[in-house]
Length: 205
Image 1 (cartoon, rainbow, N blue to C red):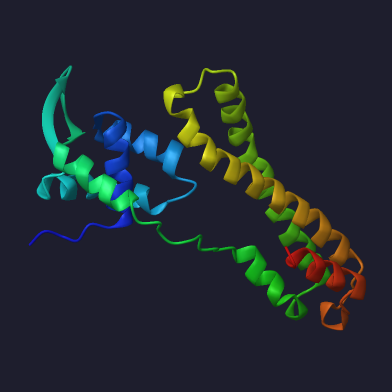
Image 2: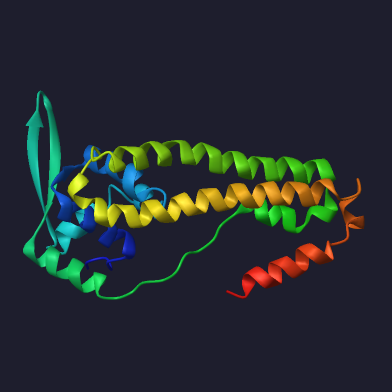
């Protein structure tokens, strides 16, 4: 019985629509292009191409590179049709998973220093990820990015992650100011009415 096709399956199929890949090349490209938006693709990498072959959406050919054999996967016409059908549906919105934010939600059971370290770690996360993001953005802006002919599609995700990293950094700066104003015991902290009003104003967009 053929296993059901998932969004991860179609994400891999989308890469095969760009060009044929060996498993190793798929690994590298998934980490580079899909890892930020669909990390499940990397964990399912070795099973998804086989699922596509079983469904007739991709082919697998064994080649020799030196003494080592490698399998190269390519999309079929049926695969292109299935990919187009998947793309015709709008899909689901983002799912936020942010452990540091969960910790801050219960900050009254820790210390102010704990909360400040957590906020600082969130900012560091944004800074570190934006290093690669910035390098890629400059590369594509200079017309020298990999698959530059697909820049119109890739820049949509690039813009999203640019905004995300900048937003987390701005939020971390704001959160640091808030937590620094707390007493030593976070359980005694009182929300700043001005900050609450500003959040409500900005939410009304």
